Length: 355
Ligand SMILES: Cc1cc2nc3c(=O)[nH]c(=O)nc-3n(C[C@H](O)[C@H](O)[C@H](O)COP(=O)(O)OP(=O)(O)OC[C@H]3O[C@@H](n4cnc5c(N)ncnc54)[C@H](O)[C@@H]3O)c2cc1C
Image (cartoon, helix red, strand yellow):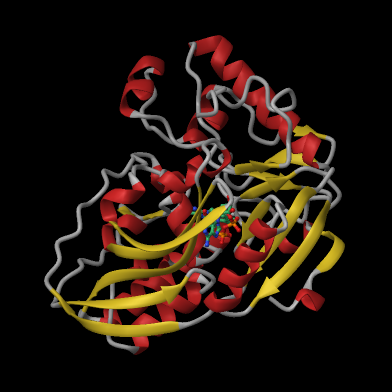
């Protein structure tokens, strides 16, 4: 690893869509998966905590910043593979029954179909590039994720959802680094390893357990489908999302409700945006520079451009606190809170004992 490339005390705000976050103790940008692996091995040798960032579109980083090495993942390799007969399990979506409030999608359909073929993507490939490249290669499926910012690594971390599909619906295997007791092991792991669910994968345990997993490459199984129709579908989704989703945010702050939670609170939809707006009446509420978006109440935005991480956190805690007190239901944040103490996130994150 060329340690000359490592910078010290660099503000992380520009590396996030929120434009919020204090300095990284050390920061390095990697351009391919070999450099990514070298950076990880260097940090482990130096006993530095590691944080990897793709597009920074699903994180709230503390104003105090992050200790250790922050790796900005710009690995961009893509390889189209062979025909594949592998079946991929699907994850049940949490449909937005009242989704038309946010996007009118009744006229939008695209059915996956055709022979399956693999594509292997570096984890730092932006989703927009993955979609464009797959279409140019005659492969469809990723059109469901059009308009979602971020990289393949971030998509896997959160098992992103777009229309009624999850990223895992196309997932075959990944090449990863497992870090445990100061040892780095490189391996290829299958679908079952990731314990996928709605907005959920094993990678979310990175902050909890003793094993930290860094994804180098991801192999997907796509379709030799109707590229023209898939491209048109992707363009429509992108356009509609751009109008209704604010980019000075980090996506939906909380996960949508489970079917059980939806039943408990007797909501017509599992959408957290609907609950925030129509049930709690919190749309447009602001703490400091942080505001519950007027466009889409699932999102908190950096309204003034100068919001602090603590203002966003306070707004999350306040709206969640009212919801919890009123219905006795505890929701999980969808965005990743990085660099905060347990006391700071009290009332927001269920405390899980370290293994
Ligand atoms: C306007 C807007 C709209 C959005 N719409 C959607 C939507 O429709 N559906 C949806 O699901 N999400 C949505 N999101 C959320 C977000 O875009 C996705 O979760 C995205 O996949 C995050 O990717 P990223 O590269 O930006 O991840 P980052 O924010 O950089 O990282 C997120 C987490 O993943 C970890 N991570 C990243 N790369 C790796 C890796 N290689 N190995 C291990 N861990 C890694 C990071 O450490 C971090 O904990 C939206 C966000 C915005 C701002």
